[in-house]
Length: 239
Image 1 (cartoon, rainbow, N blue to C red):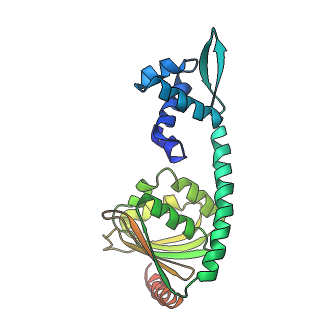
Image 2 (image 1 turned 90 degrees about the vertical axis):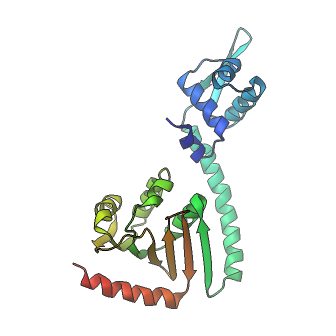
């Protein structure tokens, strides 16, 4: 297992390394763990203490020495749920502010990995969508490889409907990705760019990952409806 996966769910780099060491080789002292990981002894004990607070490891004392053991890995979920509840309450407050100040037209730009996550979460609030493009490498799947399966699970749970026009080379990838969903897929020759356009609710999202991944979202009902009509016409002409 890669420590990066634990970092993805909220542990620091050192917490992930120490936690994995305790999982793989339980019944070690803090000094032994520090030596194996080549970190300062006192620092190792601080990290161990933080993992104890998270409920991820425990210890027993034998002959005046603390020996550390892993706790149930499901305790990882406890902290995530607590953070989720805190964030949900905060999001509700922010939505009230946003609702009061909402503009009729807006443009938002999401950049990098965290930006893509924000975009996908926003996308999950729709009932239906249409997407055109994605002819190159689907880098979003690589950038969000640890979190995309969770998004797809939520996507399928909400039974979001969609239509996707992509390149022949990516048709099978798209079919496998949306195999348990209500998404219809067609392909068209000549799509080579990694840029794609998605219309959902009153939004037009322009996604690109040719260099640094980013998404531009234009919230404008007239633009979204107009491009949706173009998409529907194109959809009719593709077998």
